[in-house]
Amino acid sequence: MPEPGEVFYLPPERGEAPGKGDRPHVLLSLCTDSSEVVTLAYGSTQGTDAYRGAEHVLVDPSTSVYRVTGLVHPTYVYPSRLASYPREAIGVSSGRVVDEMPRIRTSLRRALGLGTGVTAEPNAPGSMRRGRFVELSSDLAADWEVRYGLVVTATRYSRIGFHQTIVPLLDEDYETRELDVFVADARLLPALGPRYATAVLAVPMVSTLYQPEHIRRYLDLVVQPRLMLEVEAALAMHFRF
Image 1 (spheres, helix red, strand yellow):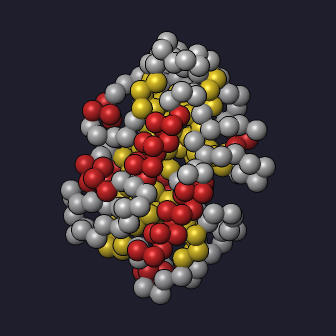
Image 2 (cartoon, one colour):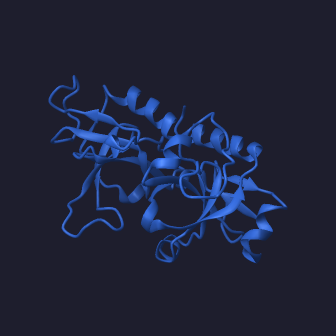
C-alpha cells in the first residue's frame, strides 16, 4: 500500500503547455483499502510559485540523508498545489521523500489554513477567498462532473495567489464516502439550484485549481463557520494530522 512521502510521476496538469513530461508528485494522504482517491503535492524544478508566496519545501536529492527519493533534480514540493488522483492510476512509486516530510506536512497545514476559519471579505478582486464557494469553468465542470467547490486556501494566499485549493461540492446523486461532510444549510442550497436539495463536501477530492482558467466566478456565498470547522476536521483526518 502506498505511504505518504512516496513519489509518483503523473501526466501534465490540465492546461499545461504541450510537450511537458510526467511531473513528480509526493503522496500526502494516507492510503487505505477503502481509499478511492489519494492526494498528492505537485513537484517542480521551478520556484516561480514559491517566489509568489505559495507554500513549498525545496527537496534536494543530492543532500537528503535518505537518497532514494525518486527525484532527479532539486524539486520544489508544493503543498499549495494539490492533486487528487484515483489510487489505482498513480502507478509505481519512484522513491520516497523521508527527511523533508515533517516540513512538508507543516507546510501543508499552512497551505490549507487549518484553524484559521472563514474570511468574510467583500466578493471582489484582491479579497481573501477562504470559505467562499466558487463555480468552476465549464470545461473543468464537465470533466470533473462537479460545478461548485469551497475554497480552503490559506487566507493570505487566497488573496494573492494564482491557485485556489477547493473541496468539491457534490449534489444529491453522489454516494457519500468516508470523510465527506454533509451540507444542510437552508440558506446555501437553494441558491445553488434544484440539484442541491442535499449536498456533500467531498473532502478526499480536495484539489488545487489554476485561478485564471479553472474558476468561472466567485459566488456570493460564504460557508458558515461551524461547517468550515467540520471540513477542517475532515481534512485533518484525511492527511492524518
